[in-house]
Structures are given as C-alpha cells and as structure tokens.
Image (cartoon, rainbow, N blue to C red):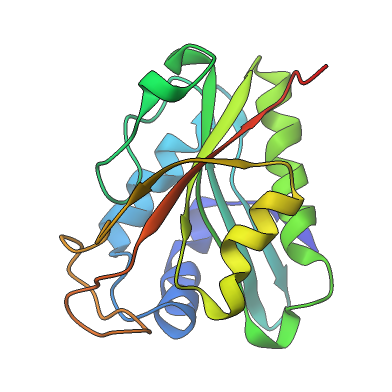
Length: 184
C-alpha cells in the first residue's frame, strides 16, 4: 500500500535505500531532515510503498517553501517559468527491484503531486540520474511530463556514499528537469 511517510519509518527507509541505491546515500540524520522538509503544516508530501514485510518504495517530495536545494547543490531557477516559492521538489524515487514494473513509481509520484497541488505549487523540479540503467530515470520523468532544462556533470561528487554505478566518489550526471502543473 502507498501511505504517507511516518517518522517511525526512517530506520527501515535507511535500510531500504542502503540496499537499493548505495550504502550511506542517506544518513539517519539526513532522513530526519528529509522528513521535516516533506511537511507543510499537517500535509506530508513524501510517501512509501510498504507492506508487512517492510518498505519497497519511496518518493521523497518537498513542498514549495520547505527546501532550497537537492542532494547536490546545483539548480537553475533562472530557467524556471514560475517563482521558486511556487515550486515543489522531487528529491528521490526508489522502487525495490521486485516491485519495479508494476506502476508503483507513478502512483507514489501522483500522491505527492496531489499534495503539491493542494498547497498551491505551480511546478515541480527534480534531478534525474542520467546514467540510470537504460536511461530509465529521464525516460520515466519525460513520460510523466517533465522537461529537461539543465545538465549538471558530477552532481553527486560531494555526497559521501558508495554509488551503485561507480563507487566513491560518484561521478554521475544529473539532468535538472521541471514539470509545470498548470499547463494549458
């Protein structure tokens, strides 16, 4: 089932992300910050895919006004067609291999988008992993209505974790992408 992220999920989320994307991509302290950034009043914008066996998916999403950067620090708000304070941020979407291909990613994202719309967001920005297998990150976001606006080489190089693709340091490229919510 998809449900809002809860504070008591964070240890399991850490275990899940360690297995799925690389050891120590998130520290427990950072996940606590992610939890706080995901809240707008009583509205939780981040969601998990969970069952009695644990967490199988995660969509971290930050409402407008609660974030200033992604996992790295490069953003190009000068290229956005809406003010920064009207833009939500998709931090991360991870689905366990055994749950991939069943439509859970879009469902987690739609849950976050519904929260963003309720809060008056006009757009969502994110950083896609350009080297993802079969370019799945950019392909997924493009199908979901995101458009590329900037490329950031070695975006995660300063993040102290073991990248599943190239170890330490991570030399992967991020594609900054935006989705406008009021397209007419």
